[in-house]
Length: 294
Image (cartoon, rainbow, N blue to C red; front, side, top):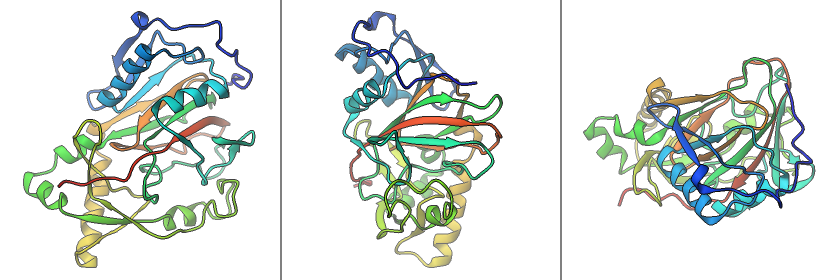
């Protein structure tokens, strides 16, 4: 099924009433669906404050049946921070700050393993706003996982140990996975392997102050300051741990669905389980340098 979202109404004659906003939790772990909001219209301060608070509480929020132009998409992302171009994805209609995620299901898909976006950056993205334009008739969902819960469920002794550790992240595994595919971005260096960066294994969220496990299978290469074998075994255990179903919510996309996630305290995974077109429009939002436990 598909719907054209490209030439949506400007939203100039549409408005939001914060009194209509409703929030429904989708799982015990994380995720909520917000209704009563028209993202294709101007989002006033009170409505945005409610959306932002919901994101901080639920970590990923979803909207249905949205008719949102590229301009409104960018405006909404700017309320959270500065939009930034993702070199790993093609540009959407040549727009410098909007990316295209598209697959017909016959080749490797972007996001097809558990990850936090771009932790190979010194300052990884704060999050992203993703709009669905076309979905397969079956499959193509996205799963999100709660990294607060992943951390909290570990033993106290292991948490104390992880609080002291730093890990190295780079793009080598992603570059290898997508070599020769269409997911190479618009720049010559879209999938090149840049210098490694270091992040705390446990990140303190800059808004909530909560601790989140901050290693992922796409970008984390090794834990520093421990023997290689210890690093390997510890990372393998943590990578398996974050996939625990108790930490997850699964979202079934429809044309016009929108997801906004907090990249600082979640991971996500898009199964490659479909054989029909799937098309998404994405705006990534700049983040800050992760801070560990002091």
